[in-house]
Every structure is written in C-alpha cells, then in structure tokens.
Length: 501
Image (cartoon, rainbow, N blue to C red; front, top):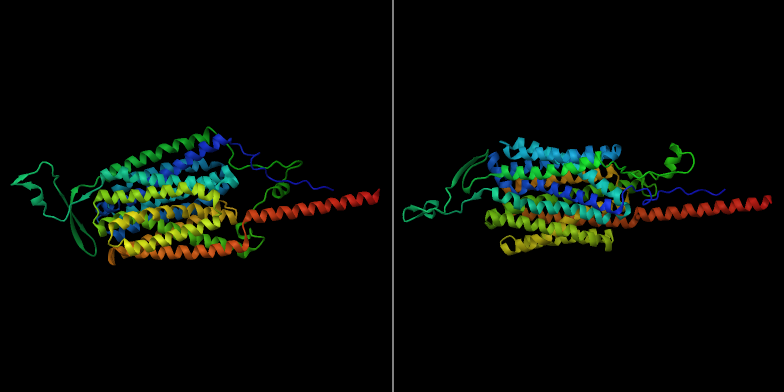
C-alpha cells in the first residue's frame, strides 16, 4: 500500500496575488509609522510634559513607562485574540488605531502625572494589539520569505519616529538662556521689537521648588492633535480590508477524500511552542525564556535612549531646544536606515550571525559614548548615529531568530512582546530615578549596563541555537525520514505482491 503524502502548499493556497501582498505590506508599514508617531511624541515632548503636569523627570518617566504597561496588557490580550479570531486582524488594527488616536488627543491636557500615565497605558495597549495582529498578517502573507518584510515592517516605526520631532518642534516650550533677560530685551532703555516676552513657570514637587523662564510657552496640544488625525485616518484602510475585501488570512489545506478532524490534524502540522524541538520540552522552555530576556533588554534600551537623548543633550551639553530635537531626529533617521538595511542583511547574513553583530555594535557604541560623549558634543552627535542603527535591528532580528527555532504563533509573539513591555517599564523607571537624583551621566552609565546585558544574552542564545538547530532544518530531516519510511513500506508491499504472484 502506497501512502499519500499530504502537505500544505504555501503558494497554492494563498488568496493574495504578489501585487496585493506588496500593497498590503505597504499599508502595514504605514501602520508601524503611525505607532512611531503616537508613541514617540512623548519622548520629544518630555520636558513640556514636566511643565504641564508640574512634576519632574522621575515622575514623568514613570508616566511614559505606562506605554510599556499597556504594551504588556495589549500583548497579553492580543495573542489569544489573534489565534482565535485570525480572520479579523484588519478590524483589530483599525479599532486600535482609532483608540490610540483618541488617547493621544487627550494626553497633553492631563493636569497630573497619574492621568497622563493612564492615557499612555491605553495607547500602549492598542500598540500591543496592533503589533501582534500586524506581524501575524506579515507572517501569513509571506510565510518562509517573511524575514525581509518583517524588517521593512519595522522600518515604518523608525520612519514615523523621525517625522514626529519635526511635527512637535514648533510647539515646544523654549527655555530662556541663563542671562539677565532685562538687559537682553532692551537697548538704551527701549524694548527691542524682536524679543518675545518671557513666561515664568514655577514648578513645585515634593522634593524641591524650581523656577524657570521660557521665551516661548508650550503648545504641544496642537502637535498631539495633528498626530492623532494622521493616525486615525489610516484606520479607514483596514476597515475597508475587513469589510470590503474579505480574504481569509490563514491558508486552508485540501485533503483528498473524507475531511474530518483526524485527517485535518494529520494534514496540518500543529506546533506546540513548548515541545517543538524534536519533542524536547526543555529546549522549548529554553528558547522562550531566552526570547523573553532578549526582548526585555532590547526594547528597554531602545525606549531608554529614545526618551532621554533630547533631555540629556539639553541638560548635560546645554543644547538649545532646536538642537536637542535635531539630535533626537538624527537618532530616528539612523534607526530607520538600520531597519531598511535589515532587509538586505537579513537576506544574505544568517540570523544567528546577524544577531551577534548587532548586539556587539550596541555594546561597542555604548562604551564609546561613556568614554567620549560625557563632555564632547561632537562625540554625542556622531555616536548617536551607530546607536540608532544597531538598536533598530534588534527587534526584527529577534523575531526572525525566534521564528527560525520555533514557529511564532500569536501566543509566541505575545511572549516576546511581554518581555519587551516589562523591559520598557523597568529601564525607564530606573533611569528616571537615577537621572533625577544621581546626575545626568547616569544615562550613559546605564547604556553600558544595557549593552553588556544584550551581549550576554545574545551569546547564550547563539550557543543554545547552534546546539539544537533551526526548525526548518529539523523539518527537512523529518520529511526525509518520512520519505524513507514510505519507501520501505512501498518495498514491503511490492515484495508481498511478488510473493502472492
């Protein structure tokens, strides 16, 4: 008896043409740009939020870390939601974009840190759902060819993040230089027509009272409104995808003969993340623990640098507000370039090697920042570029590394994003306290600590990955074994027929 091999043909069952795949990928990239817009505006407006809420770096950092709390919640909800309602991923993205836009509009009107934190938690929750639904769409659209599209997808985040400083900059408060304003604003007793009347702001916290003079008052409400309108407008596309262009996301397998539950389970290989490596549960646990720790540090470091680079440049190096915004923009431009470069590096460099290169780049750049950028403005400018470049690739490469070893279902992506969410909270809380009470240089000290952690966990991941091999390699070996068994059975059947004859 000859066994009929039942396997899923990835291309045959796809309901999208190549052109449709590319178009939908472009819209998903724009979705990630929207995430960059509404999440990173809190970094460029950090000083203004301190003014609005009458607080300090420690408290506002905790509020901003609310995004990571929400990210954790969204990841926890989004994984099971995507696995159970996979055909409604477009609807999830559309609703989440609108919800995030509403939370963003309200955020700058917060009169206290608590309310600001709650709104950022809501925005982060929607971000988590978008992240899982969007990445699942990409994985199902491109299947084994998804590594490149994943890097392009995350390029969108960098694109939105370097645009948002330009949107917000005209509305930021401008701190007066530390000179006698009365003398500067008058010439021979006559007020200069070119000088703006300063605004005095007194901030009182539980620890101290400070008075600051601003040449221009903060009007970040307008910046948040512009961002919200842009974000909400993209949701229309995904509502149309869901209701006007219904396409089943998951490929279905046609099995000749009677299709029942037993045949379906035999036809489709269902992978349990905890037992995916040759039935070795221990390996599955190791992989997911390492992925959790990897994303804990990767996302935490990214949030730390992006939220504090502008404040550090202004506080430590006495940059002007415009120059502080410009160095923040420089970081995000290099971040976006790094994501775009990942499309090529991911295609030609094995993911096991790529992840080591990126972690090494982060560690070396952090050490150079610690040595040269504490007093040197030029070094801070120059080294911000490679930091953005290497930081950008850690997230998509981590997803690629995980998918190389175990199948990344919605639950698996949730596990990774939850690690990133906790990392974002932890790094921002710790740095907010240290920056406020131990000095501005704690920003660079914690960067070195972060780089060391990334390198350590990357080395462990590489050793474990090499030891057990990738899942596609194991699938190939398994298929070879199945074919050998089938040939043996065929030989036995032929021998029996010959004996009967």
